[in-house]
Image (cartoon, rainbow, N blue to C red):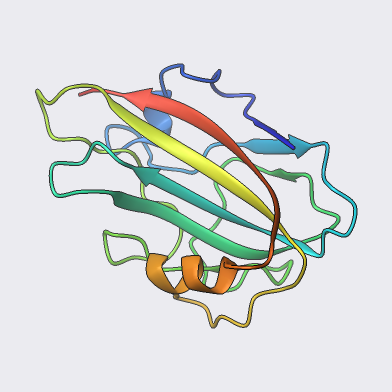
Length: 152
């Protein structure tokens, strides 16, 4: 499975509009080469370089099996019109929270990880990272990741 973005290349810099220095909207994402048997997808975006430890910027789950992209600027609703659900990020908000490393800190990596799953997850909207990772266990058919970087 492959994950990509029309807005930045693998290992490239995130444009400011996807950060706290811009509008803080989610970037467009697309995926391909999905394994047979996929019943849905989950997406996690994290910054492992945060001073306080891994910082979760986005949790999105129960994306439909037929979906192959997310448009830029996914609304911060608990449940999207497609039925996908969003979890609570480390800012304490639903939806995507833009990259926002401390000023003058080193460059941070933002890892977008997509999971192809063999089932929908029995998680209510607003789930946290630990709940999502627990629910994913034993249901992952494939993973793909895309890394964007940002420094303020």
